[in-house]
Image 1 (cartoon, helix red, strand yellow):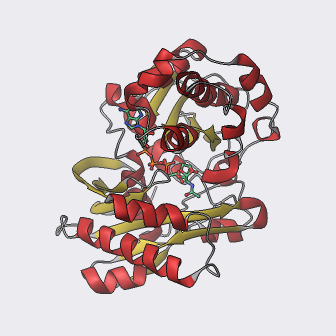
Image 2 (cartoon, protein in one colour; image 1 turned 90 degrees about the horizontal axis):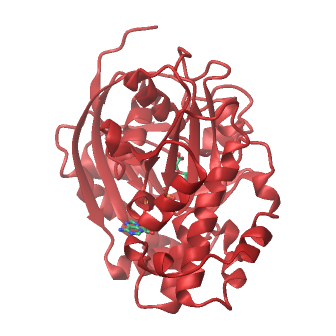
Length: 365
Ligand SMILES: Nc1ncnc2c1ncn2[C@@H]1O[C@H](COP(=O)(O)OP(=O)(O)OP(=O)(O)O)[C@@H](O)[C@H]1O
Ligand SMILES: CC(=O)N[C@H]1[C@@H]2OC[C@@H](O2)[C@@H](O)[C@@H]1O[C@H](C)C(=O)O
């Protein structure tokens, strides 16, 4: 392995739930993760959230006014976060995904990294997904190489899985006995299905809340097993990975629960999210010895109960010392350093690209 000097990278992530921008520092040489640093969360105001929500689904040739509004909110919010980290050597800027269509070979993250470099005076690595798509990949998920580094750090000898429960769920299966993430059999990664997005959409449509806090509604409701059965007829679950989703790929689920009470609908959508993770397992080479859960869904006891009923050895990633709110942001800091060093950020087993890809644009101030 070539030796690189470790640097502090700031990773920035604005996820599909549109709640705000996560920023997290990670010390890395692009291979090992040597330390974690400070973190910061900059929420979107209700007004900003509304504008971003309104822009979801737009492509670059969409309504220019809505796009411009969303773009300036995303860039300003990220500049605010960068200002909290004057010591960052480089910034990994994911941007905000507005639309993702892997079958059509296109993905769209809003936010101009070159403009951000000029504004903040920092070296910015951005546009992580397009090179992977150009090489025939899904463009997502991209956190798996970071998950691999974390699994190596844990030092276990058995396969483990990281499950991220954001708006959409994504999983990385890892064999930590392999030396490199690009090695055959080291990784398998893909989006599992809907996670929090349908639950949030239900709450927005039927209550004054934006999410089912602590799974209160789901815990009070009953799961409709007929809906579960209908849902799992969707061809996505059978499809061989790698595969990825757009946040809005499963919006028709709302129709499946329209006749249920709010509590029963929440219970059913929460069970769908848990069952999607279970369905993922059939694609793994081996059952993992442990499932480490990250993302906001790990705070939902109904969802965690659902996972524990279906899977062995489920634990929030805090149990092994990781920060489940910041893992995705840290991942993009880590990937930024890999891009600086010319190392791969995705592989055939993580996105379906034809060969390992080093994806990302480097913009200097
Ligand atoms: N206490 C809680 N109870 C229930 N659900 C919660 C709780 N805290 C967070 N969540 C859920 O987690 C979501 C946020 O998760 P997260 O921040 O991981 O999403 P994201 O990073 O935007 O999404 P993605 O990973 O898909 O890009 C919230 O919208 C909510 O649905
Ligand atoms: C296109 C896009 O932005 N996808 C996100 C989204 O949010 C979760 C899931 O869908 C995952 O595929 C990805 O994010 C994570 C950070 C990833 O690329 O690993």
